[in-house]
Length: 319
Image (cartoon, rainbow, N blue to C red; front, side, top):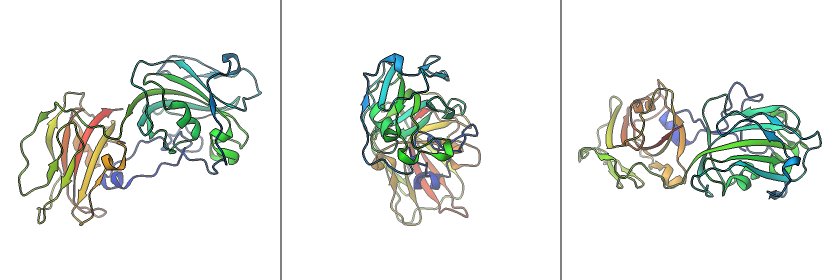
């Protein structure tokens, strides 16, 4: 679990990441979410077990997608890590390095709920299996199927370590329990629809986009290209999915090239798509009405904070 930091890409886009870590007002500490790193990492991470008898584990109300309520079997918490699949999905298996999209509720064993995504109304997204979250999440969620509801019981060695997380009310000896609904997962090379309807060719004196639809995109800015004076959006491929609405959080791959001679930055090359918010006042507001599966080119003029830039985005999902 790490504190969310706006990536350089998201900062340039002016987008607000909706990664787990941007805790909502219902969160006691503001950000004690499944992507916040332990303030003090344990010396060695324990192993998770799927063999703990069910009567020794908390029970969770509701079905996949419902905000759960946990009932604990007693005040004596488990000292070992435990994983229990409450209901198994039928989707693909989550792989190491995927961007995982999940709803979750976290609670101290026998204590208070310290965070949940259900009240915020948007699943959280974070890389899984690569050390970006607490080891209990990495161990317990890689290998699960999309659509599964999973219960994780994590002692400090699999959670926040011996320092706990005081901002969330988690002590250094507390076992914490999560119910996680695995909504979706996206690989590092995920792209838009290969059968999206192609757009018109781009002018030769403007930005040039490489990569076929359905494959990673590249972006080249020719020398002397005219700087955009107003925002614009060009369809490179029109998908067939639902249309983005104002306020939506989306999963997207993108490559950005600014006009200040900095090299392009690409989520495909960085290894993960990202979850970003579409809101009025952001350049991403131009995506309202764009169908999922599309590839688009954004042109954004300079402002007081950032130079002019172009961005190619593949829209993978609305969350």
